[in-house]
Amino acid sequence: MSTSTIVKRFTSTASSNTHHKVVIVGGGTAGLGAARQILAAFKAKGKPLKAADIAIIDSAEWHHYQPGWTLVGSGLKSKYELRRPLASLIPQSLLTHHAERASTFEPEKNSLTTESGRTFGYDALVVAPGLKVRNDAIVGLSAALADATSGVSSIYSYETCDKAWTDIDAFRHGQAIFTQPAGVIKCAGAPQKIMWMAWDRWRRTGRGENIKVDFVTGMPTMFSVPKYSEALNALRIERGVGGTFGHDLKSIDASARKATFKTADGKTEIKDYTLLHVVPPQGPHDFVKKSPLADAVGWVEVDPATLQHKRYPNVFSLGDASSLPTSKTAAAAMEQTPVLAANLSKFLVSGQLSSAKYDGWTSCPLLTEYGKLMLAEFKYGLVPDETFASVYDQTVPQRSFYHLKRDLFPWAYFNHFVDGRWYGRHGFMNPQSKAYAS
Image (cartoon, rainbow, N blue to C red):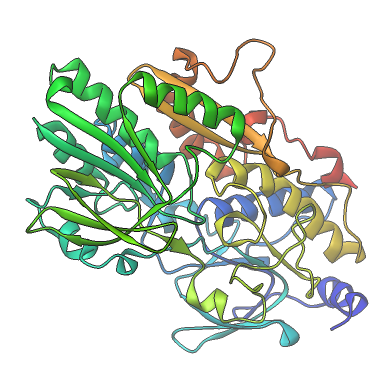
């Protein structure tokens, strides 16, 4: 369908229970944020939308503040306080919610089908279902996580993030291994955040000398951005934490407390552990990977600046499911959201895009101990782009940064972001307000 036809259809076709002006797949951080900001963008243009005009397709019962799972694993939050019923965040007066799971996309027909067999048409589509955490990619992991006595935990799911704290708090002596897989994961700093917090917990409670801590990662360095990687590696050496690079966890024998890793040269290496914190491999959802919207890897193929699909102009994507070459974090999604809203709304009204561009900015608040945090912020090209550079050396952990992570961010998320009033590092100021009105 041509761009001019899409614009005419948007201006003339009424939304219904099976056709919406905008369909959003995913009710996570990216999807909810996009819905609220698209509403705001059309309102700024003097073209307010009705509740039936934007539909969110997501069957989940709960919406989780996933960045908080590190806090749960550190004993700082309860996982129950970091979730809300998804339906409660989608007001019926503003938006439509279909509690369904998307299954297939037919972008040539401007439609998608759900697992139940329902078909929904759209004028514009936003694909934001997040990514898939693949516990099954590590032999023995699922069984070990389900065993309360295995010593194996992970902060990468709601079901297991509190087990991390239970294991860490109860640990008295032995070998602790914290892993990170090779490849793309969400919040690439989280694997070592939980390690630093465990290390500090054991130090503060007089157990540090009885516990050997090792960071075993499939990546070649501590962090992708050299500036922060150097600082984190120096911290690792200072604290006596072992570092093994280019080692990818492949299997776990929980009964023998042994973990098998594949090395960068294809060999295998077995390590003994007493406590093992695992970050599973991650990747695109199968229904996205197998769709016409995917790139060669399986992510939704979008322009890195505009977030518009490279082949289907009325399709947009953001967050973890997108091909955007930046770190997959909630902070990145918050920065992307107003750019997508500005461009999608402009496209549906005029067939053109707005002036809004995304430069790849993302943030990784790296907890380094109780009361201190290193705030990594960077954009495309792994170039640091720091909010507080004029005040702090952001490679030096700060108490003020710690309270952003522990206190401000969770509060702002549920009180303002999900309502469309919070713009991440910009606070309450929409960085794309001029693009919304154009």
